Image (cartoon, rainbow, N blue to C red; front, side, top):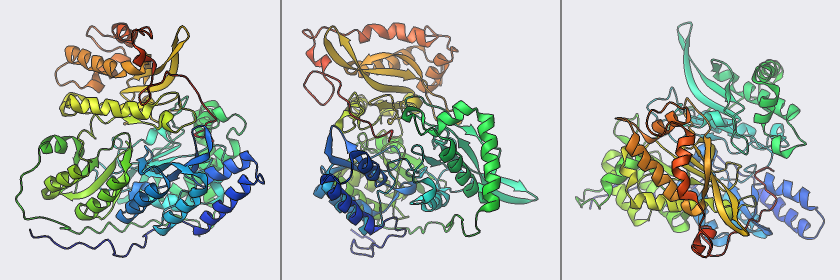
Length: 600
């Protein structure tokens, strides 16, 4: 075997960007001691804890979930290795990749949070402002820089925005959490369901090309979701910072600080009306532009990634393991850079073990010519700049690590929030249902069905939409229901959500018991196959139904509900006791919730 040498793991691990401040870890440790001694009240400590990225864990004050910010989703091999180590030392031996490109460590003893913060500082990472009423992790599409449809790479703008806002007094005590999403194009981002969503644009002015953005404001998912509005036709790049500051200032000044249920910016836009809100932002931007010091600016590093090829190639002509073609079709994206692909590594509902994190670190060093990975929007990890000749060997390595599941770019890869596995507000184990759906779909090889590839399934354990159910082709949010005195876990199902240039929220169809969710989805697919038009896809067919434009036997949501209703009739507990328990437990279902912190 001939193999080109790559840098060893002992090579310099100094972070290119150091997001950390080690003194914050020491301060957190001191504050925990004061809290345990009763010298800091619960609410004050809770605000402090959240500001430092330690989220409450279900029904206990003794444990926390530590949310690690990964700005723009960009993560290096040595950082993956460190997180693997921390997960074994202080968590449950695994980590969770969220829908907002963060990485979470669950069930951490409160006194160990500061130890994790110290460990993160070793590799330039932080949990600061990953929770709380501040600007959360600044997201960027994992395909930014390699997307075939983008105008330019928005990654450096996302990172510069994250740098400017981290620990900035401007956004430390907002009425509520605040989110920025950068995208590469309309298709590969979620820019219309964020407080501020941005798509790179180029216009020609006086014969010169000018960079800028199409900016959307006031979107967001939750108990009540809204699609954002476009601020103006084109926002020049020099106005990006001024616009961001203006939006934060208006929200800080006018956002609802009294009613937690209505204090996201989307409610302010809805109550005020878009025209009035838009005028306020544009006027405030003029003030910001005129009054900000010249030293207040975004530091945009537009130096392209250093691409080194080859990194590691083998001359061994071994056979490709079974399943390669299936994996290749449903997990890879051909980059605009000739000869390279982006590979979407499928995780089960975002979960990855410590050993798999270490394997991903090694694999990233061996196969990504840019030397790092990107977290995605669908609880996955993306390796970019993988040379096409290396794809068979990459598949073999992922197979060894248990990370070669196919279907990450299809309906088979369901998204599920943490649910009752850790969240105080959850009513159902959405996390486990997402895994059950993925396993069933892969068993049935539905990931190979082109008609289903553009559809999505997203699941939330409560109405707050952490699982993004509102923008799914088939979405679910959890609740409970009764037959007499017996309770069973239940979901409200919506249809027709989407998050492209025609972003729309799903339309509520019916309530579906947890143990009937998979049969109902399979029945919808069966009905689609029976009634579809030539070259139809499931998402297009459902879109016609929710808009009453379908001409088959199912012309509306009402027709769909009528056909599905027999599947959701609850049996008696004596006939089917399993029906009355949620996935992941053998006890009878009952609803217990605590004080939620996704609204904190």
